[in-house]
Length: 237
Image (cartoon, rainbow, N blue to C red; front, top):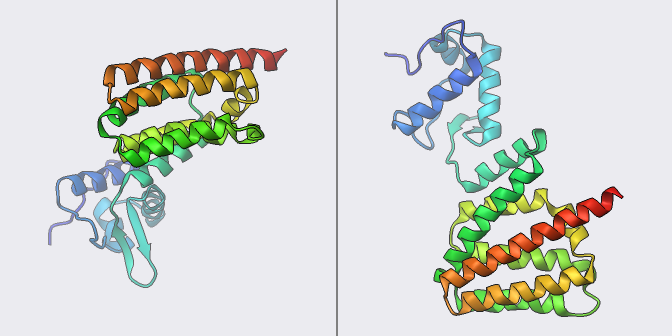
């Protein structure tokens, strides 16, 4: 029987090569979702490496969500969805945090895309939900919840875009910036301005005016970014 995998040259990084061969075979259809992978001893022979290396590669692929270990049955190819990818990115940001400016830039790219899609796809329920988050920010005694209301306004727009991958990426970025958003929204003047900007965005979404939705979101993000950096400077003093 022809081996599934190729032996690895000694000069190459073994774990990465093993993982690359698995992903290539899944893409090419030689391995399918739900397939059981060969036992460790067979993989050791096929790859020409030690069993500890095989275990390390399997452990990494299981952590990534590519493989799934089933007690008493073995290890199987698992379906990877956007939630798995979000978890991987979350760990990546935790272990190797992205520069602050890059997170801000990526957030802007994603938010402009979500508001465009939301203006085209929004439902009456989503409009009502967006309005409710604005109402919550306007209520007295809700200062401690401003961050949550602001977050949910933006994430409801992301949900209305009907793209789960974009939603998860944006959620992950906003989690990374959460502390700074909270500091900015402790200032009542910042909250008032944010509410006005949210109302303009919502009106454009209601009217399904894509250009206006993008423009009002961009104004909001630029002003929000300015407020954010001002807050950071104040914290340095």
